[in-house]
Length: 329
Image 1 (cartoon, rainbow, N blue to C red):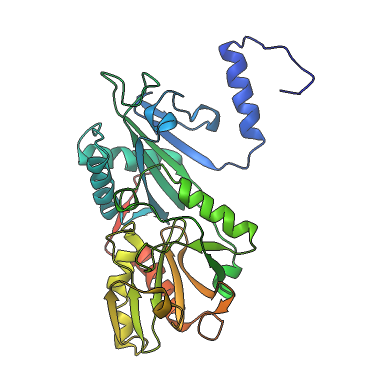
Image 2 (spheres, rainbow, N blue to C red):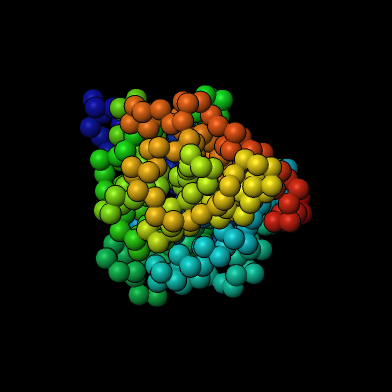
């Protein structure tokens, strides 16, 4: 509302819809379909993709989410993402709106309605609306939501030239919150903002013991000087589905002579800084090389061969592997 306009208008339902449509027209959104258990169906107009303000996920952060990739009309690795989703629900004391198979069916059907063949599928679970109290409202029904959208994108230079990251000044999340994929991403947001303001592409969390944690919404991995692919333990960070799959695929690089081994272990900062490659891993970024950390070059300061090879393996797996679900458009 303009500063000079001191009037408060009582809006009709038509007024509200018109204003939401105007809001969406000013945003470069590419949301193709949205399922809401609270509505009991799917909408394709971005102006209608809403949840109640008093949903516990909105005002208390009591909700979880996960994201799966959509590649050439097929959903990639949905079962692994659902495994993590159900674990997050259990840890967050959230009641599921149906069985695992029913949740999977809703995700697949919403994807089909969207018509989108490439992008991302993000889905949420909340404890529902009904009050502004600290605990969920009595009798609140859990909210389940599915969004089909274009997916997150990153600059091409991240892959051709590599990223520059910094050690964040923000503390890493406590383990319970780090291993649960909740909607509370405040530390992650602050870290990313800090990095951008300092001229970096992203940040890295360090745990209290001085070991490598994770990045803003991605995992971090390394290739040591003696050719070992190392990933931090998942005790204090999110179990990235992409990381877990890459740890399996990475064994193929041993046969190609690019790696000597694959390990999941604690990685002290001092050891990590001597690595010949540093990588970001995630469902949206896939595999991106880090070439500079806190102003210090990683390896020779250029993207390395393991990053390129892992990206090829992952992209091949996403198109021809055995973890794909066909969407019945």
